[in-house]
Length: 185
Ligand code: ATP
Ligand code: MG
Image (tube, helix red, strand yellow):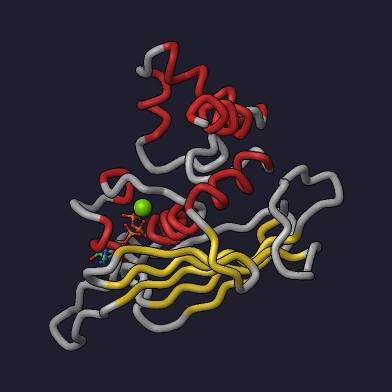
C-alpha cells in the first residue's frame, strides 16, 4: 500500500484545507519548531484509526479539532483523507466501491458527535479500517510510524509490547482481530 495523497481540514494547526501529494521515494518534512510536522504524522495515524487521545498529545479526541487562535475561531469539525494505491498482492478482504486500485479513507470528527469513517465513499466501521491497515501490515500502531520520543519508549518497553510491534510488522495482527471476533460469536 502506497500513500499518494493526504488532505486535512480543521485538523490541529491545519485549519484551512491542505492537500499534500506524496511522491514515490523519500519525503522529508522540514520547518521551524511548532509549524506542524508532528501534527502531519498524527493526521496519518488518526485517519488509520488511532483512538488514543494521549498518543495524539491531547486530553480527549476532540482536541484534534482546530481549537482557535487569537484571530480565528475554533472549528466544529476536523477531517483527514488519505488516498493510497493498493498493490496487487494486498490481501485486504474489504473491497469498497468499484475502484480496487485506489483506496480513499476519510475520517471526520464533529464536536459532540464523535467520529466516522468512509472508504471510497461508503460508510464503514472503525473495525473495517483497522482490518484494512492490519492486513497491509501498516496502520495507526505500525512500527513504521515513529513519533517523537518513541525510540526511548521501545527500548524500555516490556517483551509483550515489543512482540506486538513485531506482529504488526509481520502483518499478522489482522489474524488476532479475526480470532477475537470468531471467539465472540
Ligand atoms: P517540533 O519541531 O518542535 O517538533 P512540530 O513541527 O512537530 O514542532 P507540531 O508539534 O506538529 O510542531 O505542532 C504544534 C503546533 O500545533 C502548536 O503551535 C500547537 O498550538 C498547534 N496545535 C496543536 N493542536 C492544535 C489544535 N487543536 N488547534 C490549533 N492548534 C493546534
Ligand atoms: Mg514535532
